[in-house]
Length: 348
Image (cartoon, rainbow, N blue to C red; front, side):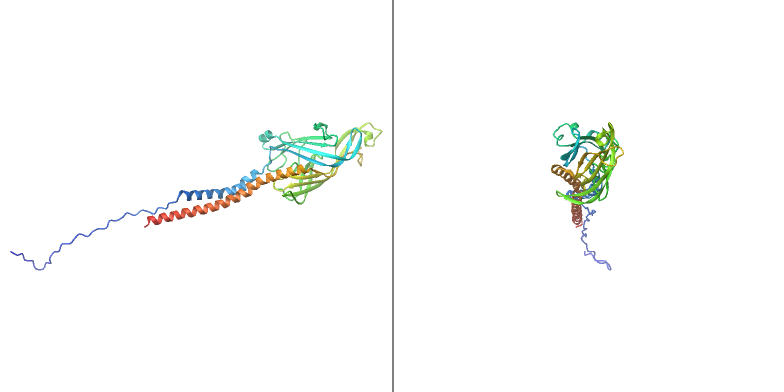
């Protein structure tokens, strides 16, 4: 028997199930940077920070007076001196002044100052060959103590034979200026104003020249026979010692304060007590100057010290700043490029 469809109902057509598309979970974009890029960026930042530190912090602390010095300077020239054996002044003689400076390292380290022992001899042709400084025409010793940065006298550590004063003596302060300085004169026992007198070139370095004079000044007394100073009727009397310097000329390397050339014209005389004129010339020399060997040695020391200051204060900061800038930019670009590439791969 055939089945009949019910009226009003459409035939039911079976349908196939609709396939579903699986969903892929999304992940956040990851920005990655290569270790090399980070290393370049870090090195660049470090050098950029180091550059101003070298210029503003390290350089002032590198400009300090050395303590381990052992330097001899020699002046020579022609002059007159009093021969005590013949009781007469000898003219047109070779005069030699030798100064030896030796640093007391142990005392310097204990005190934090620059402690220098100074020995100065004045020799005539008769005394120059003698090895013992006590047999020289004149021998003086002293102990010079200074602040290592300012070069100002520091009154400690056995300073002597007197209390020193002034801005300069064996050297000038660092970064010499074109102004008047007070230079210590051992013979006078006081500081002498030296005015700036121009710029000179000496063996390839720039030097500032300073000049001054010392007017005739009474510096002490000496017991001598009265007849020696025009008082024959008296036995031993206390004659007056007078000192002058008719020409002081110093050439100073501007960066280090080292004296690279020098000339002096000392005059030492005796006068009868209360007299206004010199009776005896003990020493008179015009233009005692550094020997060529001393000048070359001082220039070499100034050049070496100056090169160290330029290296720390200019070359290294400029190099560090330039290199730091390049490395920082390169590292930053690589970090940014690495991050963009990572983002594109993860976002496909």
